[in-house]
Amino acid sequence: MSKVIVMDHPLIKHKLTFIRDKNTGPKEFRELVKEVATLMAYEVTRELPLEEIEIETPLVKTKSQVIAGKKLGLVPILRAGLGMVEGMLDLLPAAKVGHIGLYRDPETLQPVEYFCKLPYDAVERELILLDPMLATGGSAKAAIDFLKKRGIEHIKLVCLIAAPEGIKVINDAHPDVDIYVGEVDEKLNDHAYIVPGLGDAGDRLFGTK
Ligand code: URA
Image (cartoon, rainbow, N blue to C red):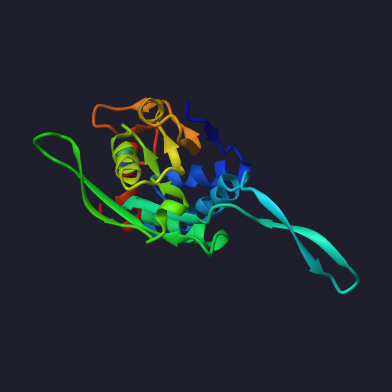
């Protein structure tokens, strides 16, 4: 079963309040999303394995810990996921960044991949999938399907806000994928927007509305 890790840190809660506020313009919205993504990078890496190496301080030789295990990759789902990349890279500068773009086929209503460019060594990495709004879960589920088809096994999903419906979709389809989220909201409305939510994350990031 997917673990749902709600990152209820006061700084994340505070910033999410202003991200949600409809009077927050694109510049401030982008800055806040970036800052929250940095805080989320801290939480999503909390369980990374460590190993001891030997170093020499100015005083003595000693053993000290460094990150071990798989390297990381970030995969924003286009386009709203882009808003979280820079903030994550501030803490994880060695992570490589792939991109995945999906659209919904108007007839079948199924997500179709229109763009996917991943690091050449993606299968050896732990991938952090970035999707600010986990609403119906359709895009995130499809993105995880596409990543797994390419042989990628270690995936975490990071969202600013999730609806219970989206969490269930991921949990049912991909119980091995843990979900890191700033807040879980009440529900989806009839247009598949998260309520109370923040509106359309892509439009608010890029000022397209
Ligand atoms: N995508 C968004 O940007 N906002 C929602 O509320 C749902 C999906």
